Amino acid sequence: MRKQQSNKSAWSRPLADLVGAVIDPVLARQGFGQSDLILYWDDIVGERLAAMSQPIKLQWPARDRHAAASGADASATLIVRVETGFALELQHLSGAVIERVNAHLGWRCVSRLTLKQGPVERRAAARRAPSAPDSIAAQTAENLVSNITDEGLRLALARLGAHALSRRPRGD
View 1 (cartoon, rainbow, N blue to C red):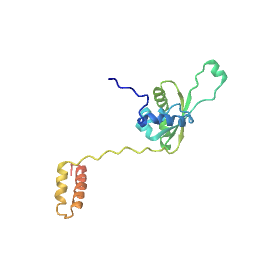
View 2: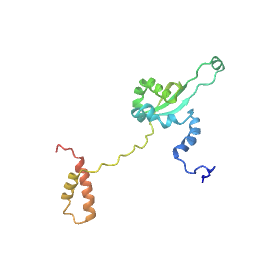
View 3: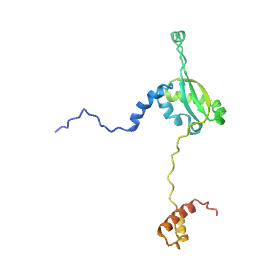
View 4: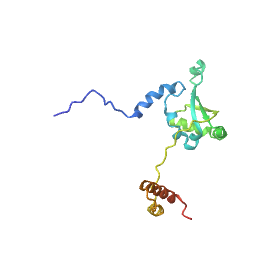
């Protein structure tokens, strides 16, 4: 017996499939043809540069009839907001940034980098889960708080002590 295929698509889809369709029209008003440059800025320029900069706008030159008729290639200017103290370093690295952006996009899209100094919006850093304390630190902490009669307080202090003792430098 064959199962009949339904013409209906599944109603649940990954959020990543929907984000591009929502963000792309908004970014198109800023000159970005697609959201890749914004979404993957960390991957394109590296964590160090991405922490101090963010792309603002991709500015395309005005159309010129003579340039279009001659087949001249019109490249865009990427406008990047950069922390004030980091602007000089990014200016020196602008050639590498342009190469990385063009390599990511797959064609010579950007020919120039313009820097706007100002505060960069920070993304919330992903927090690491705390590591479990070692068994020696846990036993030492339990021995130190064994005379406390309140069980809840004793357990909480033992956990705190175990974490504190396991992070202590071993040279003490």
